[in-house]
Image 1 (cartoon, rainbow, N blue to C red):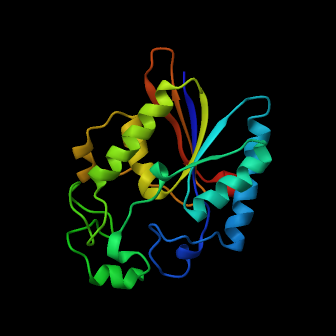
Image 2: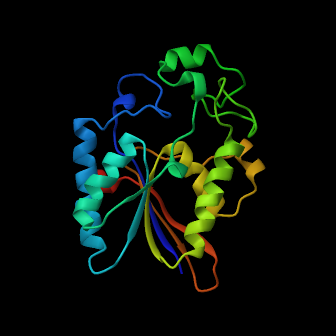
Length: 210
């Protein structure tokens, strides 16, 4: 039975500088470093005596979060581009204001990149939801068939929202009408029961960074 803890990277520079995150290598802010240390300390107390394997996005803000937390857990993270945030193409390196003014398709209210249609691309050269779904499905298939039962995944809001939908076996078309969004520093707990039913027992628990 799989037990998976997901961690959305803690506060990073694009959260406060009004720039697009995506595949830019923004680092954590000073607060983000503090938050990651708090998560690591609390998880090390909760998971004492249990062996976990950690996978993380290789983008700097997630990588730095994973490195800090893994130090507390005394494990070595495995970095992969499969867990990266959405590639936003020409919007990379641009401001959120630029993104709002240069959208190529309709997006959800209050967002600059969360498309209404799963196959739409908000900017030239960007990934669609369906393309990110595909790369995440390959990753999920891999970890579900290996021998590791206890896993920690460090990634990004958009990526994790799709991962949760995949975990729950939702149809991809449902993502045109629903979303499982998170916040920076949120910790979630996914598990299988003895009949291989998939459960999200806690979603986006924010007490770990407080």
